[in-house]
Length: 285
Image (tube, rainbow, N blue to C red):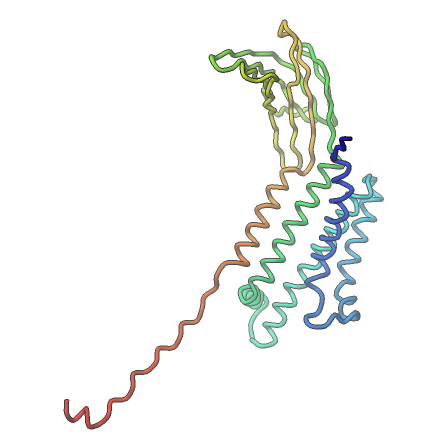
């Protein structure tokens, strides 16, 4: 008997663990050191909890569907809302012992506790990644259609038009590419060329998608088949929101990790004074 483990299984297992991790990232840094006083912890969590609940309520009223992604966005807002208070608390503690402004106090607090504040930056990157993954998984859309040259089809606000079909043959492979004009809401996004490559040693064609990246979404064009006369092709258009933010999240996590692990300046040990020379030796010399 063969059992296949696919995406639904991993979603059921991974999503609850990911949500629990996000909650711990928000609550953990706020727990008082040495003793978890419920009253103090509740006071620190009051504002972030209100921000998270307001985010969930606002997204629900806006018509955003899906319990999982909306809950992820709310928990992300909760975690992000905890971070400014921790930076402010560090600056406030420095100002109590030094007569300095807020900007310098914040800089001193951050440089003195690199691991803490670098870790908070890493938390921000993890939250950004969680939001991007939730959005791309829940709100992505795609469509596939067979097009004659000159035909179009739309997915969401994007329209793909088959302009032409090209082929190229070399000693190693034969490549067929479709020239597809992509537009969004009437704005031209250029002509893309998804392709299929056929190799003598491979039993199946290898596809090369074309990607149009934007600040808030990636659009993927995939060529799945072409007729023998090279007059029609089957094109798949997939829209994945917030995928570019995974790169931003990765950069934020790397920056936070480097800041947390960067070695600070160590005070130089004091140079010991030379031993005193006896008076008799001074006279002899």
